[in-house]
Amino acid sequence: MTTETQQLKAKNPNSLGKKLLVEQCQKIVANDLLRLSSKTLKKALLEAKIETTGHDIGLIAGNTGFGGLRYWLKCPKCSRRVGIVYKHPLTNELGCRVCLNLEYRKRRYKGMIESG
View 1 (cartoon, rainbow, N blue to C red):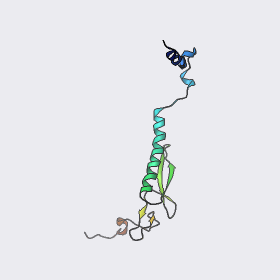
View 2: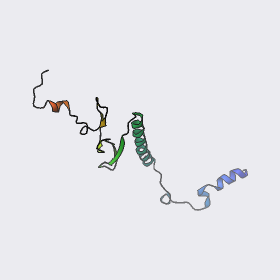
View 3: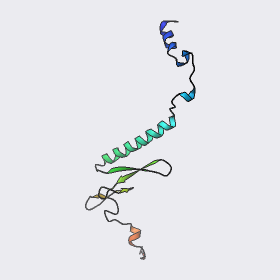
């Protein structure tokens, strides 16, 4: 055996004479790493997607009932957390449905008979 091989064997933790227990070591679990990195990756992807649209829209993180995170958009006008931000077709303003005074087609004709 060469001296390099002897030095490599000497650096093995089990060759110190006393074996360590699993409970004494720090655990690194693959699923935990994936969960943490996917949260970070998801937020980074959302922020990058918003930047590519050329608009200044913030993100708000909220906790779910099962311990997860859900990301919301921050309305540029009222700062509420919303799932959808609209761009007004005439004024090009960004905002939520309430701020831009938008309504759904079905609601507009509620109670009326539509002629088809």
